[in-house]
Length: 267
Image (cartoon, rainbow, N blue to C red; front, side, top):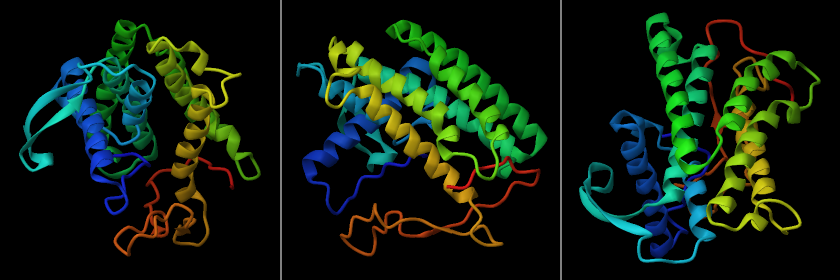
């Protein structure tokens, strides 16, 4: 499961942990209901933020949750999970972004998808997910064209950059995509004033900053700090609770692709 957000098991109270799992499981089940069983592999930690934002702006009603049966990932326990338009929007956004991530792995020649037969299958799946995401967005009144346009523009942006280029040039497509997804949570809950300024914390700006950090976090491992490609990440996100939760205070290693690597700008 991918995503840059992780819950801290040592600082997160029981109530918030239950809410977290409700949104995560709700996203997974929404992917299954909207796009089929296999689409559940697109479940990710970042997508559930869309579900959380939607619920935070909605009036509390009795149909926010529904019962879900036992699941191996919950230790075969049943649970109340999030449902409704927030979970469905999160599923749509997650599917489109998972398709983009799959294409990115193919372009970089990462792991198994670096092999031609697997790469072709992965590209076919990504194409099908794009089409399904468009249809799912239409059912919610959400135009995924902005997301797809940003996703398609990302490789060209990365190829056109090089040493000395601004990192913000690379992060712009991700900022645009996440800003659109976050802003639509306000439209979905009939609170359009929350989407853009003069709202003190507009959803679009929050999404833009989140997208910038998301893309930058994936760009960091490409910055060469040694011949081994080892990068030390800032300790800013360490929760400090215990040694079992090191956060970003770690040395990340990423294998370089077999083919020519796409240029990544210096931070």
